[in-house]
Image (cartoon, rainbow, N blue to C red):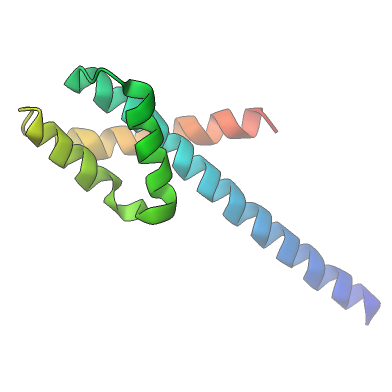
Length: 103
């Protein structure tokens, strides 16, 4: 019985670890996306913009691409939705590699 409890505990710990890593990877991806988008928009405060997008991982994780698209539109930059999604996909891999290297 004790062995089963240890196994269940190990699975729970692994699940919690995986969820935490996924959150961190997504937040890092969003920050990297923020730096990229800020450079295109010539944003005067890219650090703040990247931080705002990283914080969206908590508030509205699915709204990041819409936010960047809307911000591009306001900045007069049109037709970048596919590029935003491609960049998000690429940066997710980058963020995953970065975080796993720093373990």
